[in-house]
Every structure is written in C-alpha cells, then in structure tokens.
Amino acid sequence: MSRAYNFCAGPAILPEPVLQQARDEMLNWNNSGMSVMEMSHRGEDFIRIAETAENDFRELAGISDDYAVLFMQGGASSQFSCIPLNLLGDKPSADYINTGIWSEKAIAEAKRYGDVNIAASSRDSGFTTIPDQSVWQTDANAAYLHYTPNETIGGLEYDFIPDGGNVPLVADMSSTILSRPLDVSKFGMIYAGAQKNIGPSGLVVVVIRKDLLGKARKETPTMMNYQIFADNGSMYNTPATFSWYLAGLVFKWLKAQGGVQAMGEINARKAKKLYDFIDTNDFYGNPIDHRFRSWMNIPFTLADDALNGEFLKGADARGLLNLKGHRSVGGMRASIYNALPEAGVDALVQYMAEFAKERG
View 1 (spheres, one colour):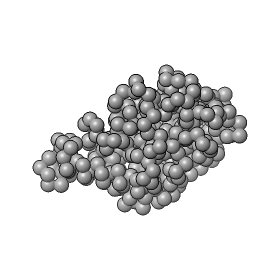
View 2 (tube, helix red, strand yellow):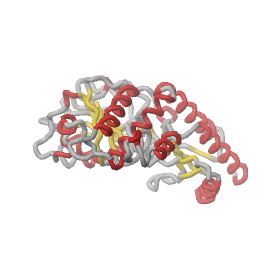
View 3 (cartoon, helix red, strand yellow):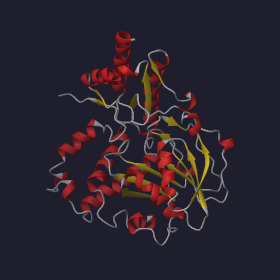
View 4 (cartoon, helix red, strand yellow):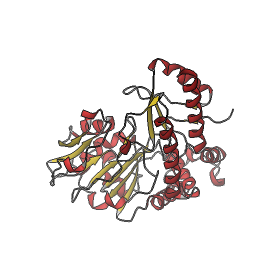
C-alpha cells in the first residue's frame, strides 16, 4: 500500500526517509547490536545521538550559547505549568495574549500559580484576528509576556514578533518551529511539542535564555525545574530516548532539504496554493483575517455542512487523511507541516475542485 497524505494536526506526518531509516536501524543501531529503544541513556551510543540532535537543532534554529536547549517530556501542555513555576520568581504577575484555545489553556494553568494579566484578546472576533500591539495593555513589571504564535486549532498566526521591551518573551511554537527562519534572540524562551514539525509525540523541546534559569519556586517539582534539566543535560532521569532519536533524524532530514530557509519557501508555496484555491471558489471558505492566516494549519468550511461527511469519506478514499476540523470549530482543517510534500497539497486542491464541481 502506498503512503497516504496525512493532514493530521498532531501526531503529524513524519518524513518518509526518516521512517525508513528508523525501520532499518530498529534492531541494530550503528552495529551496536541494540535498538535505540534498548540503549542506556547513560551509554556512549545514546549520548552521541543526543548531542548530535541538539547540535543539529541549534544549527537549524540559529540558537546561540546564551540559550540552554532542554529535551523534556509531557508535550507542550506540561509547559503551561512549568513556565509560571520557573519564571514568575518574585514578580507579581505575568502577561498573556489570548488568541485561541491553546492560549486559553496556557492562561488557565498559569492562574493556578500567580496573577495573570490578559494584555489583549481576540475572543470578541471569534479568534479570527490578532489585536494590534498598539492596544495591548502590558505591564512593564511582568515576569514574562506569553503568546501563541500559531493557534493550531483555529488557524490563526501572528505575522510579527511582539516587542516585549525588557520583559522576556515566551512563545509556544509547537506548530511553527523550524518551518521558516526565526530570530531566536528576540525571545526569552521558546517551547514546542514535538509531534508536528520535530518528531513523535511525548517530547517537548525548550529553548531558554540562561539568565532565566535558577528562578524556580521552591515547590517546583524536580522534573519541572529547568535548572535541573540544564544541569543534567536533560537526563536527570531516563528521557524519551526513542523520540529524541527520531527528532534527531528529522533534524538531519531538514538540513538535507536546505534548512529552514528552504523549508520556509516550500511552506509559503504550499499555503498559498491552498488559500488561493479557497479564495477563488465560492464552495469553500476560511474565516481568518487574511493577514493572520496560518501557514501550518488551514481550516476551511464547505458551503453546506451537511456535505462534510461525504467530503471526508471521499478524501479518505483518495488517501487524503485526517482532514476533519477540531471538534470545537468544526469544518475541515489541513495541517501542512514540513513533512507534508507539496504534492499532497496539489492532490487536496484537485480533490476539492472535483468535489465542488460535483456537489456545488
């Protein structure tokens, strides 16, 4: 059976060469006689895998020695608690921007540990736009300013990096990490769940400026303390070794594609193809402010919701999988991460055109 085009928001499609290499190395990595899943995380073999993965990630993302890179567990949602526990310190509150479901989840969790100032929100627009930064009511004394550059569920994405002034900028980049070039130096901290552009689920990568370490509250659990992870090379306990290994293979694959500059050009083309078709066909719609449309997650609706089931059934039959929109917003959603080839977008557009012609 040939590989399908998987448009799932996460766990998402992985590059086929990565899966093939993992298959070939499954029983015997580098003539070690072991699978990576069987190795000691303290052994030379895995230490080499881990160090290579971190170095390749740093090279791809342009991360300087001013930042620690942590490979943690629990996905990005675990960071909703880790961030206030580690970064609030003696500050009275933190600033958050609310642009969708993932922002709201981060806000709700942060409120368990301190005061949260919602400096701006696009809830009144139905989360279809980003408030202009000129109207944000931020606090110069805040511990940090948190935002979600791309709302995976709603398909809403910032086209700018907020200016936090002297307040550290914290970003949930789960959906956009490594999808295009990024100036990491503008951030105090970046975190990203792996299951979209990095690797399999379970792993979360944290990039944190070293001067922000060592501020954790005394009640912070050891396994949520950034300083502990930094001091122990992310191996205070047994890490998610196989996920870390697969992430490393993805980093190698990205480098072979030309890095994030080349990937950004490809991703821009993919998104433009799909949005251009949606905008020129009355059968389909996308509610997001054009300026803030996501490159990675493209929601769309049909002219008649009663046709949704038929559309999905036909898509599945053509190997166009996981196009059903999130239950909170309905409709369809095409997640077109790095590993989704341009041919997959072409196939989706062709199917959408055929379906509109037959049912429109």
